Length: 223
Image 1 (cartoon, one colour):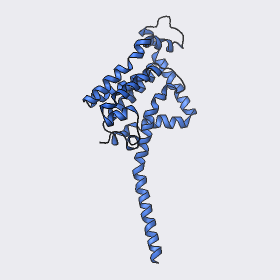
Image 2 (image 1 turned 135 degrees about the vertical axis):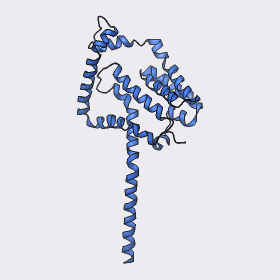
Image 3 (image 1 turned 120 degrees about the horizontal axis):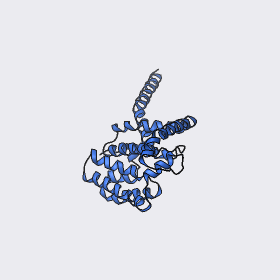
Image 4 (image 1 turned 120 degrees about the vertical axis):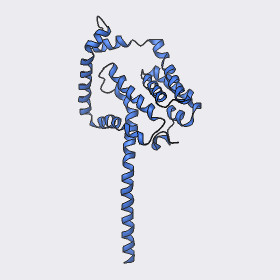
């Protein structure tokens, strides 16, 4: 059964693909990968969210274990070291100075300004880096076209992609697209999907060209 785009599955050895293609024996590797991600970068919630969405859309034993182990594996790091979301948001929105009153009210009052600044700075950065803009933004926008080539992994990918957007927006911190690198896996899949969409018409055109060339050679030989 086809699960991910053919060009991705044929040589893919990441834990998610191994789990979805080959089954539960790869579940420990998936859990270890999420656990490592939670300690090296606080982005494990993205893949955990993808697992939850996969279960919500396609409930099964496999997707239930995918979501549950993703959540459990992403918890040790924040439980050990703390994850003060409100304080982090207030600190960032106060221009990286400790806020006198880091309350949710302070966050609400300054959040929209922070989002506007983030969007403006990111647009300026993308304008100065057109190649990166094409890869990251263009690839991300082509992600929905995976629907034609994917099945079981699609809910996970879409859920994780939305979670990556939330991850960037929840604490609006301009980093010259360093934090936005979480978009890269989805952008890569989107670009692969775009190239596969082009493959069929290009293949048809190439086949017609070969046919015309063969006919021309035949007429030349007959002459």
